[in-house]
Amino acid sequence: MTYLTGFHAIEERLKSAKASGISCGPLLVAKAGPRAKEIISIAVNNKIRIERTGVFDLDNLAPDNRGIALQVADDIGSVEVSLENFLEGLGEQKNALVLILDEITDPHNYGAILRCCDQFAVDLVISRNRRNAKHAAIISQTSAGAASWVPQAETPNLVRAMEDLKECGFWIYGADMEGDAVHTKDLSGRTALVLGSEGSGISRLLLEKCDGFVGIPSSGRIDSLNVSVATGILLYEIRRQRTR
Image (cartoon, rainbow, N blue to C red; front, side):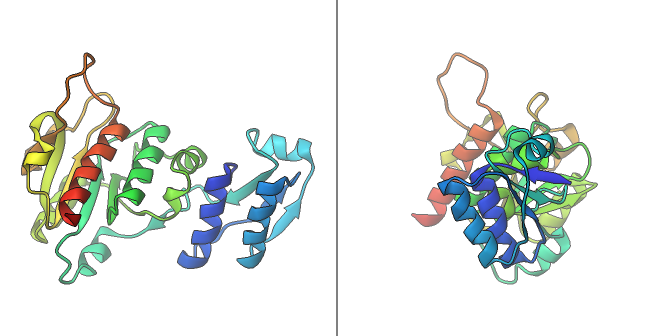
């Protein structure tokens, strides 16, 4: 089992449990300050079991706790959906937005990306079901609880997933430093954005499936932006285009 210790992560996990039906708990409490008491109240209202425990015992289970910790399964507690069900449920929706993560292995980056996805209304995040970030507690804490709200689909074959998206009318763009300036592209409609790994970028097979490439104009002295920062900027531009 995994233990969430960040206040935001615990709070959003408790709230999403009721909305999504994903189980969690118990909430372990060693000492309750004002913020912890607010979270305990949410747990009570959502009928999550609460267990009192000693400080020493909680420190052994969750060393970075702040007096409380929430026990969850090892699957990040995310809103898991299948790509097939997502595509079937689109109906006539024209402005769907999907993010494809190609080997994002740093859980801090993964969590920060999910936080951006929550803020900029990404409809689905797709990742490979092997070799991706699986550090549930770090992801949930870094995402400030967004991991409990952002729909995520896992697949063994990202190339096939891209083909399925294209069959449903999606245009797919890869994030690349040498790509066209993102603000010059029309990113309305059904759009998917591919983000490559921290070290090697987008893999060759996925590059070949992209319809185009978008980049962020910059004048810095270092090579590139962190992948989670770049994600936020790119998603902001897509959101701006769709709400102007």
